[in-house]
Image 1 (spheres, rainbow, N blue to C red):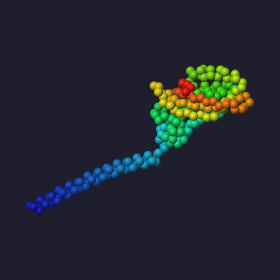
Image 2 (spheres, one colour):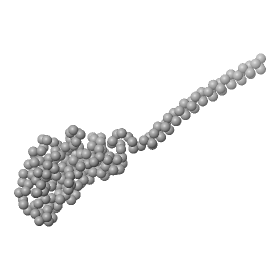
Image 3 (cartoon, helix red, strand yellow):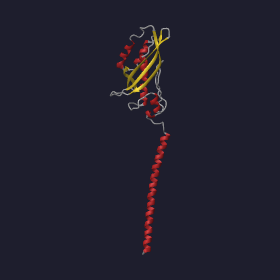
Image 4 (spheres, rainbow, N blue to C red):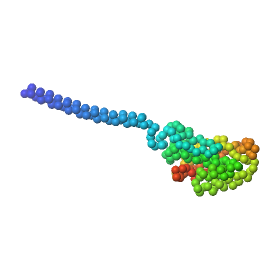
Length: 221
């Protein structure tokens, strides 16, 4: 009887061990599948790094930014996102993508240089350079800045020497991007001689209209 009981006990223990081994095997396979999935996901992230379709995560925003003839630009779209933010003096916020901020910066720099410059021999071109960057409601106001253009025959034109810009915090409850831009230029007389230097700083607010940024407000700062 005892022998029979011992045999039954051995069989039961054997069954338990086999079943336990089976469960362990299932768990091991399940864990292996999870590990394989994690490894594959990690490999995909490495293989596809830099291919994110979200422009704001790319490390090279290679759009062309228009710089008017004889104007300067500090827009730099090369490098990592962190480098682009630092080099272009951008705010680290989510009011717009990095690409949009660079577009706005480009417009702000062109606009400020335009309203700070003139060429007595090109009156129409001088005015057009400034009005093209503002909303329609501001065009007449900008044109009035040039009402005395050409009255002073001693001054022929200006030559841009330096421009710097940085994004500033927009404290208004709107979606405008705001840049502070400083332009420095030389004054050229009727004999094509440099007779002085000047500078001006403006705070420029920009709004996106039809996929392009336009100046909606500006003030000397």
